[in-house]
Amino acid sequence: MVRRLAWIFAVTGVLVFAALTAMLFSTQTQVRIPAIAALVTFAAVVLSYLGGVEGGLALQDQTGTEHTRAIAFALSSLPALAAWGVLWLPSPHWQLAAALGLFVAVWAADLWLARQGLVPSWFVDMRTAVTAVVAVTLGVALYRL
Image (cartoon, rainbow, N blue to C red; front, side, top):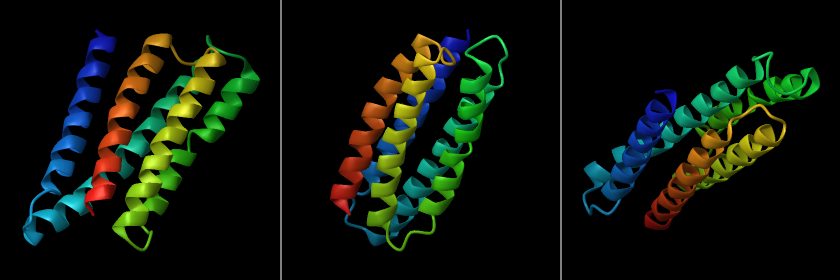
């Protein structure tokens, strides 16, 4: 049940990224500008959520070692802080490029967490697929700016 819900939420998130990116193909300024703002904001919210997931996984006593859980818990605050920083960058180009880089970095952190025994393999598989699509979507959005 949890796996199915995780996939439903992940696919829903991908659809939001795709819809907002598709709006960037509009020639109407009143569509493009809100779409850019929504895309940057949604990316920041999702990155913050992913950090929370990592923190929750690090809190489980039955996985990993105390040392790896402590590192993972400390690192779990970085996606939210970095995502907040993205919102302060001077232009949408910088914001989308930074968000793209952060999605890849958080995915790499999830891979490390999986090697430490903190993340189940199905979650890494899902994150790999979703991160690939989100990265391409953000790349297309960046190109369309």
